[in-house]
Length: 130
Image (cartoon, rainbow, N blue to C red; front, side, top):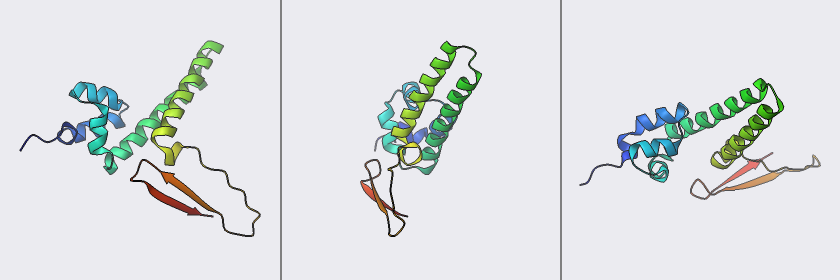
């Protein structure tokens, strides 16, 4: 048999680097593979998923600090744009955590059911009852 995939043989290193703030793209370049190759093998791994959440949380925190520490309008504008870009990426890659949630209206006399179809996880359907 052939060698195991790079994402499997370097699993701990990949997870550690992502949690430390390095992008999957940069890690893939270092390992000589594509980001898709890493995601393909690790996307269901709970530690990889946790590292991805930490990656996005750290980036958003960094962008927020840039906004708070801006000393002029140019730094402020750059910081806001950075935050918007990081926020957008987090909302796309981690929909359940940072994605836009549907608005619901209720008159208080019934059950509201929200159905979210999540294409990222085997087309599962989540039903939240309020």
